Amino acid sequence: MNNFPSLDGKVALVTGAGGTMGGAVVHALRADGCRVAMIDLNLTSMAALAAQYGHTVVAIACDIGDPEAVKVAHEQVVHQFGVVEILVNNAGILSNNKIEATTVAEWRRVMSANLDGALFWAQCVVPAMKANRWGRIINTSSLAAKTGGLTAGTAYSVSKGAMSALTFSLARELAAYGVTANAIAPAYVKTPMITEQLNEAQRQELIRQIPVGRFCEPEEFAHAVRFLASPLSGFITGEVLDLNGGLVMD
Image (tube, helix red, strand yellow):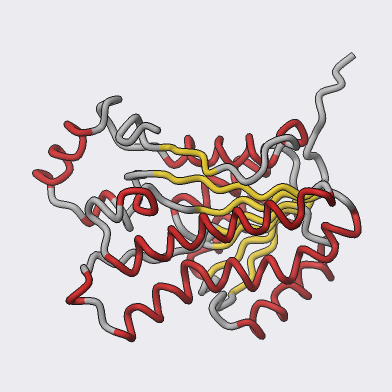
């Protein structure tokens, strides 16, 4: 008899679902039986994936930097699927500008997309998670949070460091309610936002620095999300899981 705990029927919400990493997470959570709410800035980026899964996936356009828009989108998800049990704060934008080139507008834009949205979504889903005494919050941090940004800029690196700190705060506050909060800190996932904005010489130089000798596949990131979402991960909270091929070890 197989008594392995299952995610079948649980409700997951993934921000940045229209991107490469977000799409991989949607595939992974659907494979585990979750019903998935896909959140992104526009519907077009999510249309094909949502159509593939039919009624088990809903796609909702939402500016996650707008707290009122997040509340409206959350109400739509609850109406269609019920309370959110797994929150994957994956949305983010890249900024390569270092301190002197970082404008106030850029700083605000990066913080809004990379940090504010995670806070707003957590505020929406945490009450039901606490009441049900079960939940998973999985945030996307970055290697840049630890290194100050090897190639990433100031605003991006700071936003990801703050994402790790938000994870620690949520983990401490929610542990007694059976709700875990963890983060994944990837480096150089094969996505248009990360590796495809580099030229070939830059890509080869980075690969030479990564001990495993390659970039991270989106499916590897998604598998890490599955691990932290699992019912068997309940004793892991406040962890930032490195996913960097040995580029930084601690």
